[in-house]
Length: 203
Image (cartoon, rainbow, N blue to C red; front, top):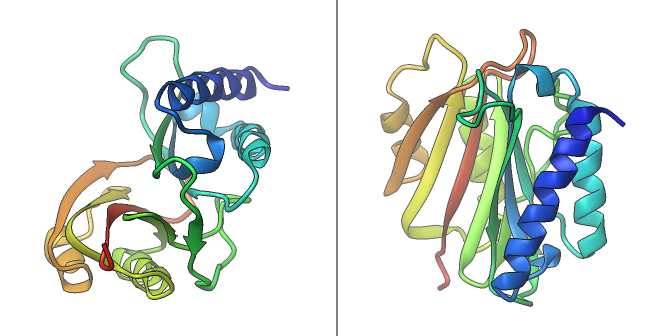
């Protein structure tokens, strides 16, 4: 096991402890954002395997997972950050049946099914350009109740930036609050990753 897999496992132990304090469990997770500094990105397969083992312990529907290569973390000596969104405790998860395409990132699919738990909806997708990634997000949302009101869309892209990112997102996802980040995924891997967290249109 690589030191990065061990770092991922330590991070996941901390996440599980926080979940327990809030009355939730691994099974309540609907989204994971995995951020890898350059050293950890080289050990992606081992890191992903550690995450998969963690999720399997919870049982049920796996969450939407986005993996983003970054230049580094704020905390010195750390190479992995995992952001977590959990739904209501014990709420059943409903997953869309969106098509999943192979990914150049390895075992991470280009589009994970959208996940709905209670009033929370999450989805993630990657693509070679902004348009293709947005199309996958839109397709995945068709399999759940969609989103309404305020929802956050984070677009991670390699430079040069896609033009008019906010306008392009609003054409597909009206009303979204859009943030943009720079990712440094290796050459030959998808250039855009999108994460969405929002409220169900049925809520």
